[in-house]
Image (tube, rainbow over all chains, first blue to last red; front, side, top):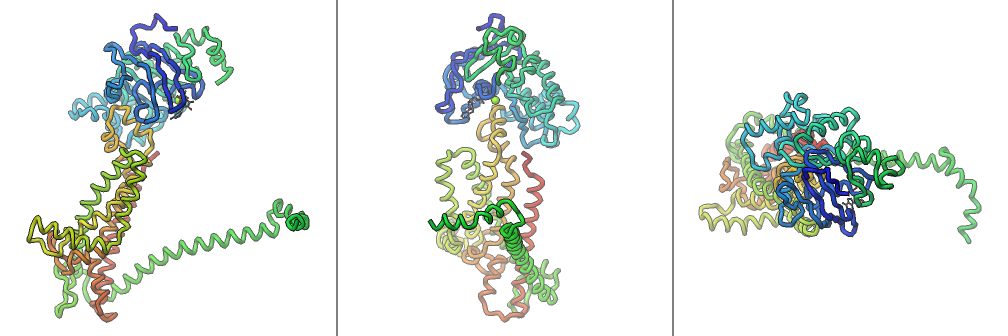
Length: 259
Length: 318
Ligand SMILES: Nc1ncnc2c1ncn2[C@@H]1O[C@H](COP(=O)(O)OP(=O)(O)O)[C@@H](O)[C@H]1O
Ligand SMILES: [Mg+2]
């Protein structure tokens, strides 16, 4: 199942098990994330996609009952981000996340994007300005907001808010970006914009995207992982998964027989 | 047996009352709804009416007062000696006492209350929170007269040990006691507002590599700002209107001063003083309390309007 074409490797999930209290939500996951590619996580609702995604940036550490074992090794420095010796804040400085629902902070557009830099203690205006502009350009939002950088982020449309959240995630120059169904709350036009964006972004950064939309996975990802009931069933190049999957379960899901 | 019989004797009736809305029961129900609505309206109306009536009485009595004393004199004179042979009516004198004691109280209650709110909402486990909240709320359940004596007999001697020139009655001591009393007003409402901030906003902040403190101060606090403003405004109104503590511990001499170490009378403590005295109704001395009361009401009204405006301005958009 481990595919030799995945090279160079950005992150490696090894024997990952996850529990919500007593609920065994991820069962022995092994997965390699290639560098500067888009990996899609697909599978029926409740199969553990979000849970897996949130392991990468240690979001589960915020909740006392959530426990996990195994490793996620980040290359090239081979640090195991799940290790108890690694500060989750360090991890989140390298791996950023875009959520299902746009969640801009109650601040101006500029301050939203600058947030990640500010929490790192960066105060120099010139540095902030430069990063904010670059991130907004990368998120294809600059032209729409450049004249109102200091107005509240809430005044943007849903699609713009989500691109703002992407800009916020990009501003810290992450190595890996996690997207959790970033378009599920958006209309088709806003969705198309964000899909286009992931295509551009993968030139710079590795991407993992959770989606329940199989067409979306087929359109934008290079690799696809199919999960079912907490297990990773099949992981391969997207073309292969959608044309000739090797597992019966994958085929049934792809052809719409369940889920 | 009995129940069975009566059920048998009225089968048609029961059916009708369920099926036809214009049956006798249906009509009765509609009447009852109307009656309840009327009663609810009347009680809502009564509270509004009473508020207006209080304002009306204050204004009418004050008009009598302002026939004798000009508004200009009232607002600019620097003496308040309504019972002297040469009476002077400068409300600024009493207002300065109110402002200073309230300022001291808020300087205690707003920072401490906000810190407590941040701790309870963002740091404390739910067990700690459930234990601490009722104890904290007890602070405002203590009768104010007890705070008054606490200020006079405990805080003042303590302050005098630091500086033996502080008089036995002073505004600092009264303000501090008032501040302690007001802490739960600030902390409780602010905490509610902060806890209402949705978790996905906090997660957004943590995901950017923020610490807990950064998340609390830079995201949760601003997101809850309108609720927190409401808490602060309530605290201000509470401080401005507080009577017993200042009457006991701040002294009753009208004194135009902004030094908290001085003794001075506030608008409220002046009103108690006159109300307890035996001034004849209708005398100008007696009418001063309505003018003072009206001033107080204008001040609290101002803060309520300000709070309303700020709340609308910063209303959370989720
Ligand atoms: N906070 C939680 N507490 C307990 N169980 C949870 C929690 N979040 C998710 N789960 C359970 O874990 C499983 C995986 O959930 P999730 O990762 O959100 O699925 P997906 O994103 O694929 O729809 C589901 O069965 C879900 O009910
Ligand atoms: Mg999900």
